[in-house]
Length: 587
Image 1: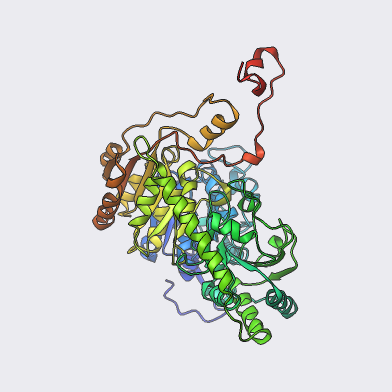
Image 2: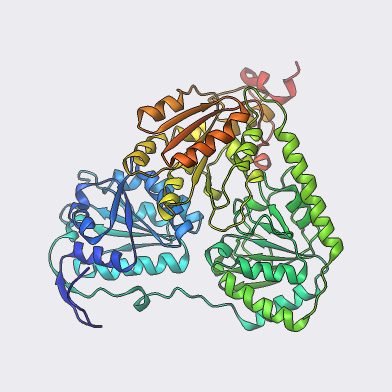
């Protein structure tokens, strides 16, 4: 820290690198992820003395996935950095994923030095233009004297708009001498949010009080605002079942009597059948994404006539995908708290709707029985659903689970249940593979004493297994549960259903992932029998070492297509391809 005691408005001499690092210290940044580069070497040199850990990954894409998960668990904005040019472009996918996940993040983006801009020099790239569409804002340092001011702006916007912000600084601006002051976060940004207008809160409470079958959808905003208790209070007062939004299975405790599980792809039939009955939906901290509300299991579950009350901190998300009766721009917890106050005034002594409770219990029981029945079908060697079932049986109450994109990772949506928030770290709607393992590393950084497991398919594992070296080197003991079926099975299912089992690019040849893990210094275990998996996971948690479990699963037991709505049976017009036309499959 700057040792000079600075009064408000007092400036001291420092280098731009020092101003940046001291601003990071003031923001409570404990670590930065990335790969070292000459562009920011002067700043990098200060980090150990400042008490900031630099975590060197093997690929910059992993850095932003790590910091995405770190923020989701800790609530503190993640920080990433990379070499100008290719180091930064390697982060595009993971920053875009964090943007769609509404995760605060600051992307420190060293760029080409000002004397050479425009010459297409070594590692020169217009990073501001590239990141503009996948961040909440791009903040460009226009003068060395403004480095701290611009970095404060980046943090302010990242927290306010819930997403990544690019802090672009020419590499020569790290050097020199400036006079500046280091402000504390409360001096330049506000963490607390309002509850919304009193008129909209009044109307919401009135509609809920009059509802015949209210249902609540709890989303990421509820988790971020620590508002689950408030959702419980409303649910219990109204006997309103509570579903969680797509891939936010930790947004309401699964063991609560009114919890019905997740909606969205491979979610809970109990949630879908319950939501379908709603005449009023209270959507809290969710944008009700199109993909997350699509029909699933051939159930058109999202009611078209229900009145929707939507609470979101971002006014851009209100009624973006579904028309609303009431839109409330506010913090999920604060708005829910105010609605509850009003409900108590309107209907202070509501009786529990016993018939509704019975319905909810029956729907959940039927769905649980179906999940177990599907899991117990034999597989060669292991039914992937059976592996998920055995995994969930041994998960500790506080465990954090990250999930990737793919056939098994998505099926996990039906099996994963959490009773605490900030436990489910999913790839969400950007849908890129290679997310789960680096995000598990980030989650473990946020809670070092909590067991953290990644559920990842073998295709996605090929995009992230290099970070086992990072886990070993940095002593981050996470457990990778690799579901190995030797194929890109989510896409393979499309070729089964729509292309008459013609497989192009779907099958992959894998090494022995357990052996590869051991060669990288981690524990590697291969599992070929379902009854072995539970004890292996328990032992891995107890060992507290980076572990890779290569789970051999059946590649023919596939989930429904991701985008059935976007695929059509193939039609071929040229004679050369006529045999591929769906009308000729039986000929």
